[in-house]
Amino acid sequence: MRKDFPILEQQVRGKPLVYLDSAATSQKPRAVIEAIARYYQEDNANVHRGVHLLSERATQAYEAAREKTQRFIHAAHAHEIVFVRGTTEAINLVSQAYGRTRVGAGDEVLVTVMEHHSNIVPWQLLCEEKGAILRVAPMDDEGQLLLDELEGLIGPRTKLLALGHVSNALGTINPSAPSRRWRTGGTCRCSSTAPGGAASRGRRAGAGLRLLRLLRPQAVRPTGIGVLYGKSDLLEQMPPGRAGAT
Image (tube, rainbow, N blue to C red; front, side, top):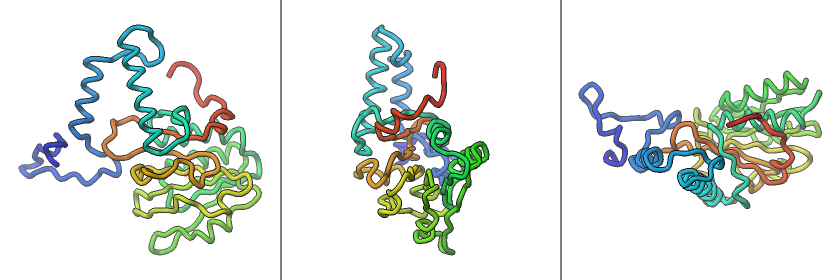
């Protein structure tokens, strides 16, 4: 294990490094470090904005990563994969591009009490801006989501349900396949799988989701990379969340 993760080969205060904070930032294996170094040494160029050889190779590698992500989560199309800088940016993008056009005064956005602040604050700001109501589903003393009470909060004014699949604070794993009630009406389910991205492997992306889900594999990815998955029909309806060059 240590030979695969160079940072673990060092010592801290005379003792072998034991790193236990991977839920926040995982250390990078040698394969990832070497792949990044190889790109900067051999292929560094603009993606999609050049016709020279380096740009072509960089674009091919970029799109190959999109297709690999599509296969990993079993998305229907590669264009349903949107690369972002992390789950927080993805949630803010959905809040701005989807929320601003779909949520109005008196509407409701539903979150759970165990959400990370990155899946609470964007919805708080959206509700304040639109005059909407933010509702919070409770959990029990063991950190388990009270599903019956959550379902009881879903009503005709619920425009969006923002639910983390895995809690990075409690370790709670919430259902990835929601009940029929979660899929009815006009409610869009926005599910963040960070830090449980690996839990999505082998499952069809969007299974049980009315519109979209968020994914950021927490383990061993380069810093500053995330994925927003959205079904084609939804992405096509969403206006740009950011203008100008990326």
